[in-house]
Length: 372
Image (cartoon, rainbow, N blue to C red; front, side, top):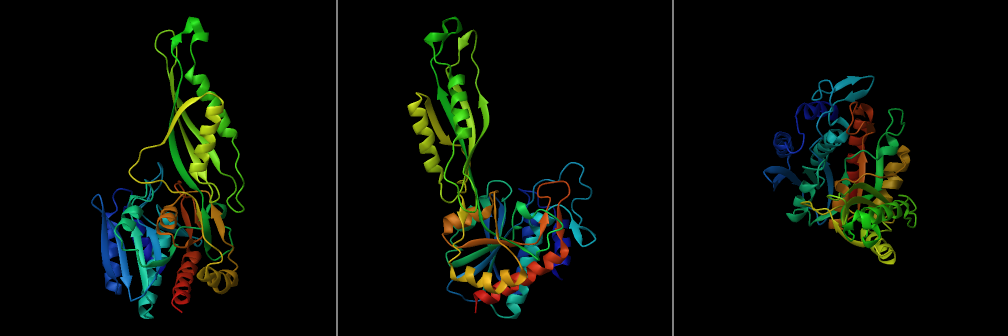
Protein backbone atom coordinates (compact mmCIF):
# COMPACT_ATOMS: atom_id res chain seq x y z
CA UNK A 1 0.00 0.00 0.00
CA UNK A 2 1.58 3.29 -1.09
CA UNK A 3 0.88 6.69 0.47
CA UNK A 4 -2.01 7.52 -1.87
CA UNK A 5 -3.74 4.19 -1.22
CA UNK A 6 -3.31 4.70 2.52
CA UNK A 7 -4.69 8.23 2.25
CA UNK A 8 -7.81 6.87 0.55
CA UNK A 9 -8.31 4.50 3.47
CA UNK A 10 -7.71 7.16 6.13
CA UNK A 11 -10.13 9.63 4.55
CA UNK A 12 -12.77 6.88 4.49
CA UNK A 13 -12.56 6.52 8.29
CA UNK A 14 -14.67 9.13 10.08
CA UNK A 15 -12.47 10.69 12.77
CA UNK A 16 -14.14 14.01 13.60
CA UNK A 17 -13.03 14.83 17.14
CA UNK A 18 -13.82 13.36 19.66
CA UNK A 19 -14.44 10.19 17.61
CA UNK A 20 -10.91 9.04 16.77
CA UNK A 21 -10.91 5.46 18.10
CA UNK A 22 -11.69 3.72 14.80
CA UNK A 23 -8.77 5.36 13.01
CA UNK A 24 -6.55 4.88 16.09
CA UNK A 25 -7.29 1.15 16.15
CA UNK A 26 -6.59 0.88 12.42
CA UNK A 27 -3.25 2.71 12.64
CA UNK A 28 -2.19 0.85 15.79
CA UNK A 29 -2.72 -2.46 14.02
CA UNK A 30 -0.94 -1.22 10.89
CA UNK A 31 2.11 -0.01 12.83
CA UNK A 32 2.26 -3.27 14.79
CA UNK A 33 2.17 -5.26 11.53
CA UNK A 34 5.01 -3.13 10.16
CA UNK A 35 7.18 -4.04 13.16
CA UNK A 36 6.68 -1.24 15.68
CA UNK A 37 6.11 -1.70 19.38
CA UNK A 38 2.82 0.16 19.91
CA UNK A 39 1.64 1.80 23.14
CA UNK A 40 -1.58 3.77 23.52
CA UNK A 41 -2.15 6.79 25.76
CA UNK A 42 -5.66 7.45 27.03
CA UNK A 43 -7.41 10.79 26.63
CA UNK A 44 -10.89 10.41 28.10
CA UNK A 45 -11.38 7.04 26.42
CA UNK A 46 -9.72 8.16 23.18
CA UNK A 47 -6.44 6.51 22.17
CA UNK A 48 -3.25 8.32 21.23
CA UNK A 49 -0.43 6.23 19.76
CA UNK A 50 3.29 6.13 20.53
CA UNK A 51 4.96 3.48 18.34
CA UNK A 52 8.68 2.72 18.63
CA UNK A 53 11.04 0.82 16.37
CA UNK A 54 14.66 0.05 17.17
CA UNK A 55 17.00 1.34 19.85
CA UNK A 56 18.16 4.95 20.10
CA UNK A 57 19.38 7.21 22.88
CA UNK A 58 17.37 10.07 21.38
CA UNK A 59 14.72 9.27 18.79
CA UNK A 60 13.54 11.15 15.77
CA UNK A 61 9.75 11.43 16.17
CA UNK A 62 7.30 11.79 13.31
CA UNK A 63 4.00 13.24 14.53
CA UNK A 64 0.51 13.47 13.11
CA UNK A 65 -2.95 14.13 14.49
CA UNK A 66 -5.75 11.70 13.63
CA UNK A 67 -8.78 13.92 14.17
CA UNK A 68 -10.53 16.26 11.76
CA UNK A 69 -13.00 19.10 12.08
CA UNK A 70 -16.64 18.31 11.18
CA UNK A 71 -17.43 18.33 7.44
CA UNK A 72 -18.64 21.62 6.01
CA UNK A 73 -22.31 21.92 5.13
CA UNK A 74 -22.58 21.07 1.45
CA UNK A 75 -19.41 18.95 1.33
CA UNK A 76 -20.14 16.12 -1.09
CA UNK A 77 -19.03 12.67 0.12
CA UNK A 78 -16.58 14.00 2.73
CA UNK A 79 -15.27 10.53 3.59
CA UNK A 80 -14.20 9.66 0.06
CA UNK A 81 -10.96 10.85 -1.55
CA UNK A 82 -11.93 12.25 -4.93
CA UNK A 83 -8.95 12.38 -7.32
CA UNK A 84 -8.71 14.50 -10.44
CA UNK A 85 -5.80 16.15 -12.27
CA UNK A 86 -3.34 15.12 -9.57
CA UNK A 87 -5.38 16.66 -6.73
CA UNK A 88 -7.13 14.69 -3.98
CA UNK A 89 -10.12 16.21 -2.20
CA UNK A 90 -11.84 15.01 0.95
CA UNK A 91 -12.27 15.73 4.65
CA UNK A 92 -8.90 15.58 6.39
CA UNK A 93 -6.92 15.09 3.17
CA UNK A 94 -4.90 18.21 3.93
CA UNK A 95 -5.42 18.49 7.69
CA UNK A 96 -3.77 16.10 8.19
CA UNK A 97 -4.35 12.60 6.90
CA UNK A 98 -1.98 13.24 4.00
CA UNK A 99 0.84 13.85 6.46
CA UNK A 100 -0.12 10.74 8.44
CA UNK A 101 -0.17 8.60 5.27
CA UNK A 102 3.32 9.83 4.34
CA UNK A 103 4.60 9.17 7.87
CA UNK A 104 3.30 5.57 7.97
CA UNK A 105 4.63 4.84 4.48
CA UNK A 106 8.07 6.20 5.42
CA UNK A 107 7.97 4.18 8.65
CA UNK A 108 7.86 0.98 6.57
CA UNK A 109 11.07 2.03 4.86
CA UNK A 110 12.68 2.77 8.24
CA UNK A 111 11.94 -0.78 9.37
CA UNK A 112 13.27 -2.28 6.13
CA UNK A 113 16.49 -0.30 6.63
CA UNK A 114 16.58 -1.01 10.39
CA UNK A 115 16.57 2.67 11.33
CA UNK A 116 15.20 3.62 14.80
CA UNK A 117 12.10 5.81 14.80
CA UNK A 118 9.12 6.87 16.90
CA UNK A 119 5.75 7.44 15.26
CA UNK A 120 3.46 9.56 17.44
CA UNK A 121 -0.22 10.03 16.57
CA UNK A 122 -2.54 12.22 18.61
CA UNK A 123 -6.20 13.01 19.12
CA UNK A 124 -7.95 16.34 19.79
CA UNK A 125 -5.59 18.64 17.86
CA UNK A 126 -8.58 20.34 16.28
CA UNK A 127 -9.93 21.13 19.74
CA UNK A 128 -7.63 21.96 22.68
CA UNK A 129 -4.69 19.55 22.12
CA UNK A 130 -5.67 17.19 24.92
CA UNK A 131 -3.94 14.36 23.08
CA UNK A 132 -0.57 16.12 22.74
CA UNK A 133 -0.55 17.03 26.44
CA UNK A 134 -1.52 13.47 27.46
CA UNK A 135 1.29 12.01 25.33
CA UNK A 136 3.83 14.29 26.97
CA UNK A 137 2.44 13.56 30.45
CA UNK A 138 2.82 9.82 29.78
CA UNK A 139 6.61 10.12 29.71
CA UNK A 140 6.81 8.11 26.48
CA UNK A 141 8.62 10.98 24.73
CA UNK A 142 11.31 11.49 27.36
CA UNK A 143 13.79 9.99 24.87
CA UNK A 144 12.66 12.23 21.98
CA UNK A 145 15.46 14.20 20.37
CA UNK A 146 13.73 15.91 17.44
CA UNK A 147 10.11 16.06 16.24
CA UNK A 148 8.79 16.53 12.71
CA UNK A 149 5.07 17.09 12.33
CA UNK A 150 3.26 16.15 9.14
CA UNK A 151 1.24 19.39 9.05
CA UNK A 152 1.38 21.34 5.83
CA UNK A 153 3.89 24.17 5.91
CA UNK A 154 1.63 27.14 6.45
CA UNK A 155 -1.14 29.32 5.11
CA UNK A 156 1.19 31.18 2.75
CA UNK A 157 1.48 28.03 0.63
CA UNK A 158 -2.29 27.58 0.25
CA UNK A 159 -2.27 27.29 -3.54
CA UNK A 160 -2.50 24.35 -5.94
CA UNK A 161 0.04 26.07 -8.21
CA UNK A 162 2.92 25.96 -5.71
CA UNK A 163 5.89 24.29 -7.41
CA UNK A 164 7.74 23.09 -4.31
CA UNK A 165 7.66 19.30 -3.84
CA UNK A 166 6.77 19.59 -0.14
CA UNK A 167 6.46 22.27 2.54
CA UNK A 168 8.46 23.08 5.65
CA UNK A 169 7.51 25.27 8.61
CA UNK A 170 10.05 26.50 11.18
CA UNK A 171 7.79 28.12 13.75
CA UNK A 172 4.30 29.21 14.70
CA UNK A 173 2.62 32.01 16.56
CA UNK A 174 0.98 31.21 19.88
CA UNK A 175 -2.50 32.07 21.10
CA UNK A 176 -3.85 32.55 24.61
CA UNK A 177 -7.46 33.55 25.31
CA UNK A 178 -8.03 35.85 28.30
CA UNK A 179 -11.12 36.98 30.17
CA UNK A 180 -11.21 40.33 31.97
CA UNK A 181 -13.70 42.05 34.22
CA UNK A 182 -13.63 45.83 34.43
CA UNK A 183 -15.28 47.28 37.52
CA UNK A 184 -16.96 50.68 37.74
CA UNK A 185 -19.13 52.44 40.32
CA UNK A 186 -22.90 52.02 40.15
CA UNK A 187 -25.08 55.08 40.36
CA UNK A 188 -28.43 56.35 39.18
CA UNK A 189 -28.16 57.34 35.54
CA UNK A 190 -29.64 60.73 36.36
CA UNK A 191 -26.57 61.33 38.51
CA UNK A 192 -24.06 60.22 35.95
CA UNK A 193 -21.09 62.01 37.52
CA UNK A 194 -21.46 60.07 40.76
CA UNK A 195 -20.71 56.76 39.05
CA UNK A 196 -17.98 55.23 36.93
CA UNK A 197 -19.36 53.61 33.79
CA UNK A 198 -17.69 50.19 33.38
CA UNK A 199 -18.67 50.01 29.70
CA UNK A 200 -16.91 53.30 28.95
CA UNK A 201 -13.81 52.11 30.80
CA UNK A 202 -13.96 48.80 28.94
CA UNK A 203 -14.19 50.62 25.62
CA UNK A 204 -11.12 52.66 26.54
CA UNK A 205 -9.26 49.45 27.40
CA UNK A 206 -10.41 47.68 24.22
CA UNK A 207 -9.31 50.54 21.95
CA UNK A 208 -5.92 50.73 23.65
CA UNK A 209 -5.41 46.96 23.48
CA UNK A 210 -6.29 46.90 19.79
CA UNK A 211 -3.70 49.58 19.02
CA UNK A 212 -0.99 48.35 21.41
CA UNK A 213 2.30 47.61 19.62
CA UNK A 214 5.25 45.38 20.45
CA UNK A 215 8.68 44.83 18.89
CA UNK A 216 8.42 42.95 15.59
CA UNK A 217 9.76 39.43 15.28
CA UNK A 218 12.09 38.88 12.31
CA UNK A 219 10.07 36.03 10.80
CA UNK A 220 6.71 35.87 12.59
CA UNK A 221 5.89 39.57 12.55
CA UNK A 222 3.89 41.29 15.26
CA UNK A 223 2.42 40.21 18.54
CA UNK A 224 -1.25 41.16 18.39
CA UNK A 225 -4.19 41.58 20.76
CA UNK A 226 -7.60 40.75 19.31
CA UNK A 227 -10.65 41.83 21.32
CA UNK A 228 -13.39 39.25 20.78
CA UNK A 229 -16.30 40.20 23.03
CA UNK A 230 -17.61 42.91 25.35
CA UNK A 231 -20.62 42.08 27.52
CA UNK A 232 -22.38 44.28 30.07
CA UNK A 233 -25.76 45.61 31.07
CA UNK A 234 -27.31 47.76 33.75
CA UNK A 235 -30.69 47.06 35.28
CA UNK A 236 -33.24 49.81 35.61
CA UNK A 237 -31.94 53.32 35.01
CA UNK A 238 -28.39 52.82 36.32
CA UNK A 239 -24.74 53.30 35.44
CA UNK A 240 -23.25 49.78 34.84
CA UNK A 241 -20.63 48.80 37.39
CA UNK A 242 -19.15 45.74 35.62
CA UNK A 243 -18.16 44.83 32.07
CA UNK A 244 -16.68 41.55 30.84
CA UNK A 245 -14.21 41.42 27.95
CA UNK A 246 -12.54 38.47 26.22
CA UNK A 247 -9.46 38.90 24.06
CA UNK A 248 -6.79 36.76 22.44
CA UNK A 249 -3.07 37.45 22.66
CA UNK A 250 -1.32 36.21 19.51
CA UNK A 251 2.30 35.81 20.59
CA UNK A 252 5.64 35.66 18.81
CA UNK A 253 8.80 34.01 20.22
CA UNK A 254 10.29 37.33 21.37
CA UNK A 255 7.13 38.38 23.27
CA UNK A 256 5.55 36.07 25.83
CA UNK A 257 1.98 36.52 27.04
CA UNK A 258 3.23 37.51 30.50
CA UNK A 259 4.91 40.64 29.12
CA UNK A 260 1.74 41.52 27.19
CA UNK A 261 -0.33 41.26 30.37
CA UNK A 262 2.13 43.46 32.25
CA UNK A 263 1.81 46.15 29.59
CA UNK A 264 -1.99 45.94 29.72
CA UNK A 265 -2.09 46.09 33.51
CA UNK A 266 0.32 49.05 33.55
CA UNK A 267 -1.92 50.89 31.09
CA UNK A 268 -4.98 50.25 33.26
CA UNK A 269 -3.17 51.44 36.37
CA UNK A 270 -2.17 54.70 34.66
CA UNK A 271 -5.72 55.25 33.37
CA UNK A 272 -7.46 54.33 36.65
CA UNK A 273 -9.17 51.34 35.05
CA UNK A 274 -10.03 48.72 37.67
CA UNK A 275 -9.43 45.41 35.85
CA UNK A 276 -9.02 41.73 36.67
CA UNK A 277 -7.43 39.67 33.86
CA UNK A 278 -7.20 35.86 33.89
CA UNK A 279 -6.63 33.13 31.31
CA UNK A 280 -9.88 31.71 29.96
CA UNK A 281 -10.48 28.41 31.72
CA UNK A 282 -9.87 25.25 29.72
CA UNK A 283 -8.63 21.71 30.37
CA UNK A 284 -5.19 22.19 28.80
CA UNK A 285 -2.54 24.93 28.88
CA UNK A 286 -2.41 27.32 25.95
CA UNK A 287 0.40 27.14 23.42
CA UNK A 288 2.95 29.92 23.33
CA UNK A 289 4.80 30.72 20.12
CA UNK A 290 7.93 28.84 19.11
CA UNK A 291 10.60 28.72 16.42
CA UNK A 292 13.29 26.15 15.72
CA UNK A 293 16.95 27.02 16.25
CA UNK A 294 18.42 27.16 12.75
CA UNK A 295 21.88 26.52 14.24
CA UNK A 296 20.76 23.08 15.42
CA UNK A 297 22.98 20.45 13.80
CA UNK A 298 20.17 18.32 12.40
CA UNK A 299 18.30 21.37 11.10
CA UNK A 300 21.43 22.41 9.21
CA UNK A 301 21.80 18.88 7.85
CA UNK A 302 18.19 18.92 6.64
CA UNK A 303 18.69 22.32 5.02
CA UNK A 304 21.86 21.38 3.16
CA UNK A 305 20.94 17.82 2.14
CA UNK A 306 17.14 17.88 1.80
CA UNK A 307 15.49 21.29 1.67
CA UNK A 308 17.88 23.30 -0.50
CA UNK A 309 18.46 20.50 -3.08
CA UNK A 310 14.67 20.32 -3.52
CA UNK A 311 14.17 24.08 -3.70
CA UNK A 312 12.09 24.16 -0.51
CA UNK A 313 12.09 27.40 1.47
CA UNK A 314 10.90 27.13 5.10
CA UNK A 315 8.01 29.36 6.15
CA UNK A 316 6.46 30.42 9.45
CA UNK A 317 2.77 30.05 10.31
CA UNK A 318 0.29 32.31 12.08
CA UNK A 319 -1.90 29.45 13.30
CA UNK A 320 -1.44 27.39 16.46
CA UNK A 321 -0.99 23.60 16.29
CA UNK A 322 0.20 20.69 18.42
CA UNK A 323 3.74 21.67 17.46
CA UNK A 324 3.44 24.59 19.89
CA UNK A 325 2.75 22.10 22.68
CA UNK A 326 5.64 19.77 21.85
CA UNK A 327 8.18 22.56 21.29
CA UNK A 328 7.38 24.39 24.52
CA UNK A 329 6.81 21.42 26.84
CA UNK A 330 9.49 19.02 25.56
CA UNK A 331 12.09 21.69 24.88
CA UNK A 332 13.31 19.91 21.73
CA UNK A 333 13.59 21.15 18.13
CA UNK A 334 10.26 20.92 16.28
CA UNK A 335 9.50 21.57 12.61
CA UNK A 336 6.62 20.77 10.27
CA UNK A 337 7.18 19.01 6.95
CA UNK A 338 4.10 18.11 4.97
CA UNK A 339 2.50 17.85 1.54
CA UNK A 340 1.46 20.89 -0.46
CA UNK A 341 -2.24 21.17 0.41
CA UNK A 342 -4.91 23.67 1.37
CA UNK A 343 -8.55 24.44 2.02
CA UNK A 344 -8.01 23.74 5.71
CA UNK A 345 -11.33 23.58 7.60
CA UNK A 346 -13.07 24.58 4.36
CA UNK A 347 -15.48 23.06 1.86
CA UNK A 348 -12.86 22.35 -0.80
CA UNK A 349 -10.03 20.73 1.19
CA UNK A 350 -7.33 19.43 -1.14
CA UNK A 351 -3.89 17.81 -1.35
CA UNK A 352 -1.46 17.56 -4.26
CA UNK A 353 -0.85 13.84 -4.73
CA UNK A 354 2.62 14.14 -6.26
CA UNK A 355 3.57 16.20 -3.20
CA UNK A 356 2.27 13.41 -0.95
CA UNK A 357 4.76 11.04 -2.56
CA UNK A 358 7.54 13.64 -2.42
CA UNK A 359 6.83 14.18 1.29
CA UNK A 360 7.10 10.43 1.90
CA UNK A 361 10.54 10.40 0.24
CA UNK A 362 11.51 13.48 2.29
CA UNK A 363 10.64 11.63 5.51
CA UNK A 364 12.67 8.63 4.38
CA UNK A 365 15.64 10.90 3.70
CA UNK A 366 15.22 12.69 7.07
CA UNK A 367 15.11 9.36 8.95
CA UNK A 368 18.31 8.24 7.23
CA UNK A 369 20.06 11.58 7.91
CA UNK A 370 19.07 11.56 11.58
CA UNK A 371 20.46 8.07 12.11
CA UNK A 372 23.63 8.59 10.08
